[in-house]
Length: 339
Ligand SMILES: Cc1ncc(COP(=O)(O)O)c(C=O)c1O
Image (tube, rainbow, N blue to C red; front, side, top):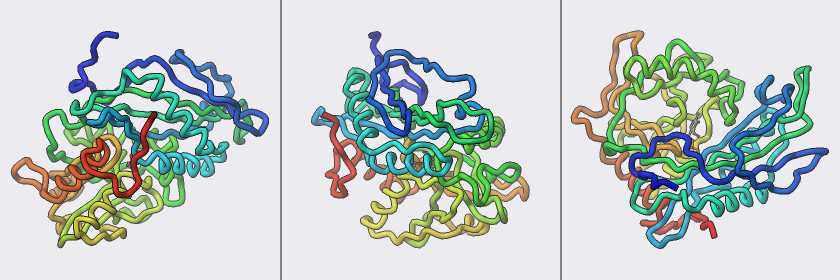
């Protein structure tokens, strides 16, 4: 293989050697299969194609200084994928198949695990789709669970720097009693115009508001939102946001750092009182937010004037990253080794 430049890898697809697959047929899951084909053969009437029966996950594996590959909280991803399956009436992937797929796909693609210290990691993409045919709006009788991996570069190539976001006033990502709390493709399709427009306007992302009242912060594109003030970590409580595993972990780290934690509604007006703000998710751990613009009122909420992230966000970021790479002891039982 030509040598990959680990530090320059984008957050994108790089072909690896193998992926793994498992089919659900006649009411049961089959054996895990290994494939080197990047394509799948799918029935033209598969429900994934017509009715959006699809869910995906995203998690990372990290090479430690000790040469051991670490997985971060895979059980939470497995659980979330089961919730997604229940939410759109798909067959649930049992945890033993989920972890067997992870172990196999990493072991077979070991040469793509970026080295310790490169800032890069191996991104795992589990996917569950309705593969069986239906013409009426009904769930499929057959499902395909697959997992591929791709090495991804460090998210912040120029360092951990704050980004600009805009309040989204034009589009909703998820309905109040819809599917925002699960990780299904339809939510992402619904966010594409918003994110495209935000990028065109020079923003890193858009901050979605609650779809019912348009008064509260929901989440930041594919990441949860948090604000910090008065030594308190505050993050929205909402049915229409995805329960982020990174956010869940930052909440615990924040408490260990002596911060209070509040999970509650955040009104737009409260943005002006935060000392720091950030977006959190697997891709970046934390994207510090330097400024949020409300284009409908012309108001800007500014969290960084010097182009640097705030001290608490920086601490949170460093601690979580250190646990993931094994530089700090894992006192929570979040890490599992791939052998
Ligand atoms: C909509 C949305 N919110 C939040 C997150 C962050 O979740 P996690 O920390 O589990 O990656 C993601 C990414 O998975 C996402 O797609």
